Image (cartoon, rainbow over all chains, first blue to last red; front, side):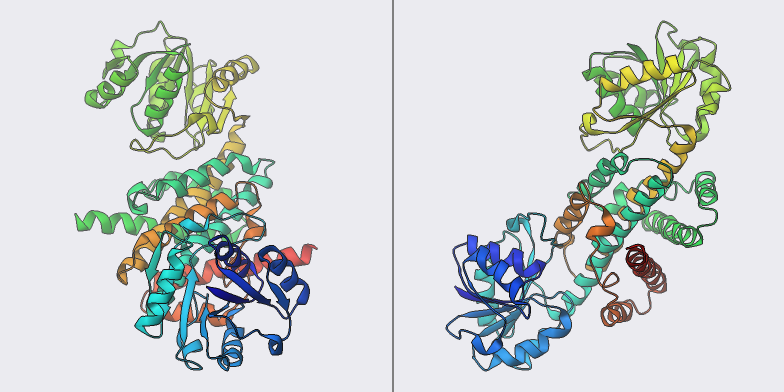
Length: 260
Length: 260
């Protein structure tokens, strides 16, 4: 397909590269910041623009990959070209685009991207939604050229998915940071915990998290939990977090036993 | 070394196998449950026993790998044989063994083990501590036969390490379960999130978590956070958890900027 990318952030960067590698033509990269557009455009052999008046309308698809609150205005501006427009946001309804054009869809790669780390796009779940069955089918075909995991996900389901991703990714990463800081405060290297972090994530690749839960809370080991809270004396936020998470784990266990 | 293992749980199982593979002789496996002892003993070509009176004293090392609250009694019982005794617990002081014999140490593998999943022991950080410098040196040599990552960690440091591991492993696993349940409630497959979970853990293998934090909280994106809380209407516990973790992330960001 002939595709232009609106945006030059992490998602735009990885998506443009994956589409280019799959043989699609990236025509233009638009960004308000010309330098950002130029950098990405250079990598995918596209034209960089920072002015919506310079949009080349001879494409089949515009992919809007920008901050959520900027999607609506860009969709409106691009709708004049009467081409298929999709956004890549987990937290944004299809209607943010489809209220401007029926030629609308969502193309949401469910992964955390950083510019400095390579991602194997073939394993990234791609969640697609079209305003019509025909668009859904077009997006499904496109998605399958870059990923082995393509799912139809409605706007309502995508909201839940985005929320669940916060629990599965953003919050665990923050807990990693807490653990790193606890170690640093006691001259211990974060390398001590890195293999544990990786193993914990690998375990649930083919198992249910509840069934591989370990630690003092799932054993309801009050002595250990009390000693942990004592170690956190003076760090009220961490104590509160420790108690709240442990309470959840203890209840999860009970619910599991009750269900048996 | 000639080693007997006291216990037959996850840590005992993986440790016995790793030691056997490294060329050490596993003499006996003790468990109160004879069948458990027999199963592990079969795998490492050792004798299974369920009676402490049948302990073979002709070993160099007893490794006590049992529930934390059972360590002290076993250390006391074994101390009569006047051989080196170590425990494998992250949450237990050296003194729980060394109060019974000066021939005492700690041999703590910092990893989460399940019997059903293979672990590459060479990447597991091994935290050692000896009651004397000589014992520390013996344990260091032993540890290096099965792992590339051997650290001297004092009892005080190990307490912090164990606490940090709860934040780095047990709590994230629980958050994975929350995300799985959110998806299941809306007919979405947990496979959608599995690559994200793995990538999040892989990212911090060579980066600092704070520097790769993503999601609405780090952007202080109140609109998205509010919509997430609305999706959690009626699930007060999850709302409370969402708010508490998001507050921490928002503050982390501010602290980072303030430090610049």
